[in-house]
Image 1 (spheres, one colour):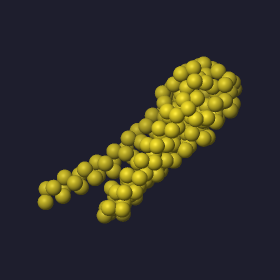
Image 2: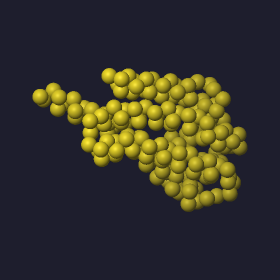
Image 3: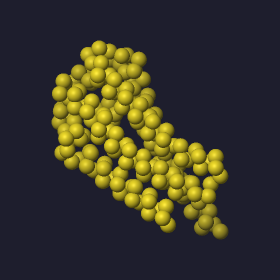
Image 4: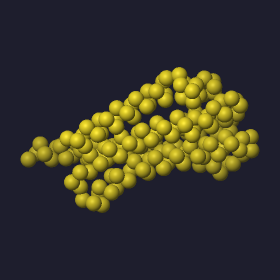
Length: 175
């Protein structure tokens, strides 16, 4: 029961942080960033797979948008993923209670893998912004794949524990 309470608490914290960072008009939040970039989708939310496309988007953000994006990457875009990481770890821990050590280890590693990809994405975008207008076409071209990998890892980090719990529940009902 305590494990379930921790999962629900972590979910509530992540939801609250999401609401504040994405919808509240706080300094460095997504609302301010969208205003500064003219409402254009940031690279974290809409992947681009070609360096020219990445740099066209960075150019369209304007100087103020690029500066705010850099601050966003090291503040808001770290705080929210950390809160989500806490929830994902709690969920994986809850779902893996009683599992064999290898299966448990895999389930518990999934949130860390997602978080590592999220931070790699942030570092890549920060690097591109800090070098702008100079180009790093290798990083820019790889960025879309990192963003897509991050999304897939998040789906797996959330879906695997939920599926594990659903299967366990079905097995209990079958007894």
